[in-house]
Image 1 (cartoon, rainbow, N blue to C red):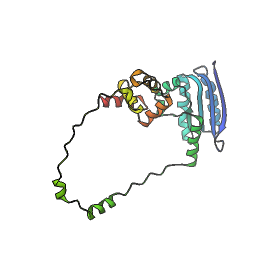
Image 2 (cartoon, rainbow, N blue to C red):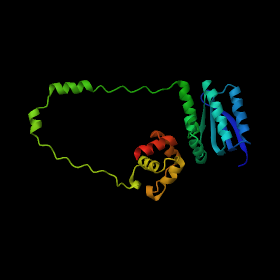
Image 3 (cartoon, rainbow, N blue to C red):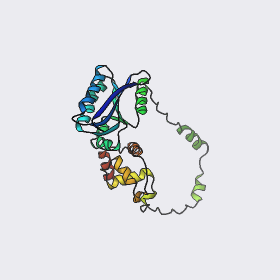
Image 4 (cartoon, rainbow, N blue to C red):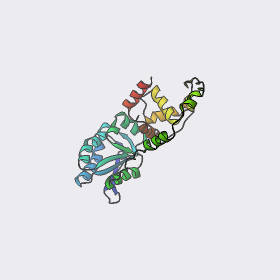
Length: 236
């Protein structure tokens, strides 16, 4: 694929979301076209923006710089810029640069649209109340005290020695534990290379998509290299 292809469209229940679809590669020679498309939307006061990178093979520092330089002003105007459908090679660089601390990434355009819609509607989940179990427990204890004599008269069961499970075959671990073991071995690996390491004999040729690996890393709060290094160091 030569050069870059850029197009825009609107989405959302009120057509308040703009989608920039990009194809090809983004470097110093092609980034200006993407920058013009983004600037045009901002001048129109359109600050809810999704950039679809599903057909982008490569992004240079010039391309990443466009997103990073604009994100502050976009958010100051009540909007956001969300990146979607990055291919594994592009995401690896994105993660290596730790831009996931700055920019939101989604697997699909629909998912990013839903996030915008939820933000517009102010949808939030109310915190669950604490179960009030203290009072019922107290009443049972007051009305039915345990007789001390019968408890004392019962012989204690011999305690079985606790055996450590340290000789577990990595191939038999859960997917989450396999990922943890890989991080302990090499915390520099990102989601895509962890995916490839899972599909080896040591880990039972576990086949899983890199999006799944990425979501598991996020759930375990290990979705940055610095966090993976801290985890590996604390596990040794």
